Amino acid sequence: MWEAIRRWFDPRELRSVGSTPDYRFSLANERTFLAWLRTGLALIAGGLAAAQFLPRFPLAHLREVIAVALLLLGAAVAVRAVDHWSRTERAIRLGEELPASRFPAVLALVVAVGALLLVVAVLVRGLG
Image (cartoon, rainbow, N blue to C red; front, side, top):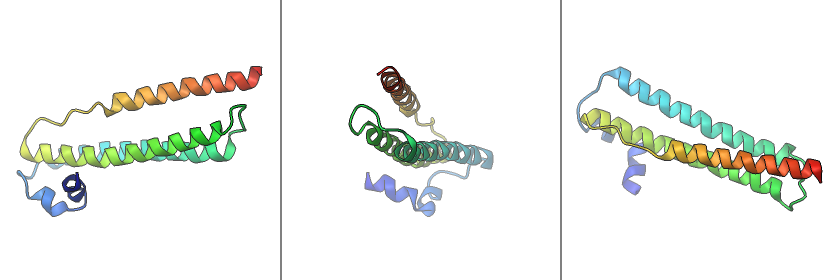
């Protein structure tokens, strides 16, 4: 684990493996990383907005639970983004198959379940 984290911050180590790829592949990998980072920032912004602007729900601390869940999910997306960028860049340089990831599917399911729970909370508040 520490080895992977060290690689994130050491561009010399990344450039020491394999051969220099076509720059378009590296730039596409970087754009993907930035898209994931924007997703993480959006989740963090949503968490802050939930903490500040959601009304209190009948369930105690539901607003805080929603905010913390969004903040943690945003942090996880950001960390996952840099890890995936690093592993993909390494694979590109070595001419290997790109690393597979279940993370997009997991993130989509978590967001969908969260949205459904929010729908229930809004309906309970509106009808109650």
